[in-house]
Image (cartoon, rainbow, N blue to C red; front, side, top):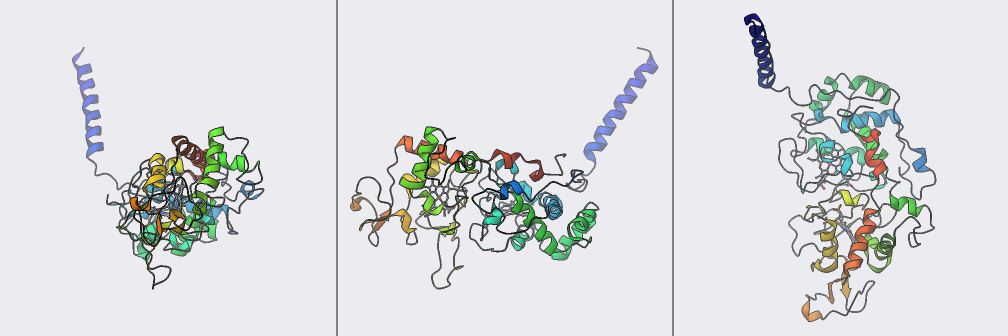
Length: 397
Ligand code: HEC
Ligand code: HEC
């Protein structure tokens, strides 16, 4: 190889390695700085008329969904700018592919510290009236600002600083103008926008929904279900008390709100303590979660203690602990109760307090399998793959 050619090659190599060195040594621009959202030329439709028509529930709870406001909400939801060091967004913990939950026992906040509880799934949230595992927030527009201020989750507790960070990003100007008619950024507008985006995340196309739309009640045989799924559906709605708490179209606590299900004799996390009545502090009561997309949202319970649905079912079958606040539905009443399952239990073998012992369900293996098969029909792949709910910073329309 002629000498100049070698030099040429070496120069190229040298230049290449310099570029690599410079590139790797450059102090990383704080993550999020260079991020811009990619939005579709034509605004996505967030108000879903198909979901409203012919459904057996009102997905929006009479709220108005404006496509431009929800679009702004989507960008805010996925913007890492809303955390102090530009590291995490709402979407870091609430991931679309896993039902807007994540697969961690507790997720990491902006400084790698662990959140206090298991990340809740988000879907059909607009139909609900209380938020967080302890139901401490009732207004979604206000609730959605809490994670930003939370010292573990996103860490921006000064309102002016949060507003300034949003004002700083040029891409927000047109979004605020389209949504609210002016570029003014306020926490109130941010709350409304994120809440509208969250309200627009409607699940209504799971196998369960399709079957449900073909029959009169959830007690009828679903024509699209396998035999095992229908067996599980019957167990869920009749033999076992599951639907007493996980009821209604979202299989959530819309009627029973929070319950103590006897996970522990002594709870480390008090849950809904003191919220309902100061004189009778609740202990171990937690929001009854919706079971929509439940197959994807594990680990389970407020502390993520169960890794699989098998473990959850085994807990209900044989693991309920006595607790003074244990739900009446999960006790065996010596005077006969709503659910007295299986053989009469010898009370001497169980802790009997106030004439009640924790319910034992005596499930057979095929019953356990069927319950799980039924719960798997609640997964809605449409909502989990819909581009309008995806991260606009990493996906393109
Ligand atoms: C670090 C992880 C993390 C981040 C970031 C995060 N969340 Fe959460 N989210 C959680 C956890 C954990 C809970 C349950 C907290 C509790 O009960 O105390 C929760 C609960 C919720 C709920 C309540 C759902 C229900 O059914 O009651 C909503 C809604 C929600 N988050 C929205 C948001 C929004 C909006 C953002 C961004 C502004 C956000 N989250 C950022 C982890 C996170
Ligand atoms: C007395 C009311 C009640 C009954 C009855 C009940 N549940 Fe629950 N369920 C709850 C509550 C409350 C939680 C959350 C408890 C916690 O985290 O402390 C829960 C949690 C769950 C979870 C985990 C949800 C998540 O997002 O982590 C599953 C799965 C579940 N229940 C399924 C069932 C099945 C199956 C049955 C019937 C065998 C049943 N439940 C009966 C109230 C109930």
